[in-house]
Amino acid sequence: MKARLIVLTVAVLVLLGGSLGYVLHARQRDGGHQVLAAASTFTLDEAGLYYRDTATGRVGRRGGPPDGPSCERFYASGDRALCLRAMPGVPARTQAVVYDRRFSELQTVIVPGIPNRARVSPSGQVLSWTSFAVGDSYAASGFSTRTSVLDLRTGYLIKSVESIPLTVDGVRYHAADVNYWGVNFAADDNRFYATVSSAGKTHLVEGDLHAWSARTLRENVECPSLSPDGTRIAFKKKVSADPVAPWRLYVLELDGMKEHALAETHSVDDQAAWLDGATVGYALPGKDGKGSDVWAVPADGSGEPRLTVPGASSPVAVAAAPR
Image 1 (spheres, rainbow, N blue to C red):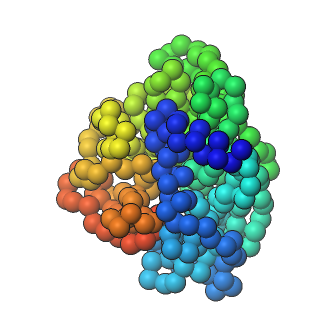
Image 2 (cartoon, rainbow, N blue to C red):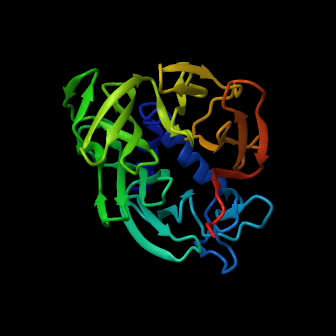
């Protein structure tokens, strides 16, 4: 059964736009890791660039050893951190673990599928994660995304946001193959941006948690990342039919909907992260075919990419703890 699942997975990589392929390839490339808790001295209290170390699978901070918890996807903001882990066995399951700044475990949620995207709102109060799930009857391949939202203020868990009423080009949209991924929150803990796919197309959507509604803003936008000032979206855009290198990093100005390409010319299959108001970070596969590296590039389209953390993924800039 496990062998058949692997064959099926490989067969549907193109249908899923490659993101699942990157996750599975990364897992094979990195190898298995023992699940470890954070060292007692490892916290989010010190400002800096945090990341997942591909050699150990643990979270680290640039300038120090990777002494954080074991994760396959990591993100942090405010007073909370989110760690996604693949659980052993078949079918695939993802463990989403919520931590405080000192990496005390606050809550764990288990969902179907393979870990893919993780985000925390600026306040740390609303979290979201995406996994690739198996078994939805509408998907010819048997695979689909599953995106959850957890509101720590109320404890309410939305197991799948695909039930949210969706408006496409001003018209209420109904389809069985609607999938969401890459949720990214605004500073108000209510408005969010995400990718929605249906009928072979992807759209940037703006959602409202309180009103429980979502509307499309623009086609061909994947894995949005909202800038710290809330005015721009970094995203990956499909620019080629080549399944090996289909994407290019772009930034979209929400006021006026003007977009520009970034100086990174490699195909980036990642949800970029704003390292500051002028810089975007992302992961690319390592040149030796093992692990991945974190790179950074100016958000205005100028300059050139620079290697930021070798052997790393899941970059996130964390502010210092308030005093």
